[in-house]
Image (cartoon, rainbow, N blue to C red; front, side, top):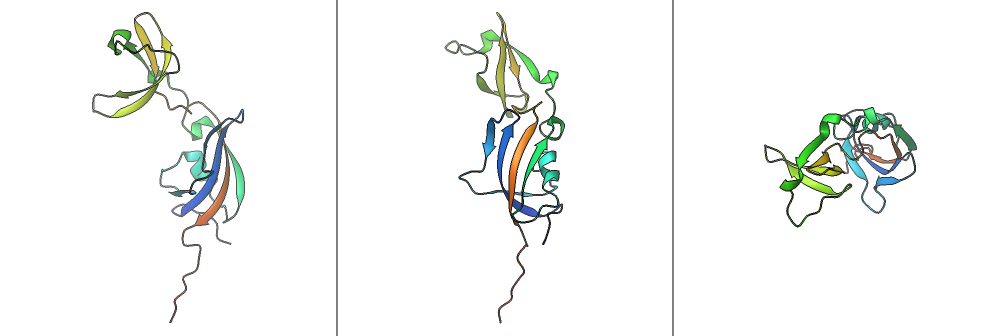
Length: 151
């Protein structure tokens, strides 16, 4: 039976959880996730974790933070003057916001701390610093079916 190798386009169903069992994402009720293995479309631990799998195989991947979204980076905590928030907005810890950088790119942040004159914003990926657990099922490997030519 054919096994997944780098460069294959595959489809998987997955259930992503944290160590405490909290679900952060799942393909349940949706089409399977499609991606090219080794193309950098997925976190490194997921990409390498599907190598060698066969169609219909199920497995659990435990992916360290370094092979997922990386460690929490202190330089991704930003100080923002509280007086720059809209007057009708009361900043609160845990509030999710979208910021725009100097090049016009939007990026998500979460309020980590509210001080008297400053708000500390966390621009790390929400899953940074976390070990991730994925239950996956390989649904299909593109090109897995032999080509049949009809006369």
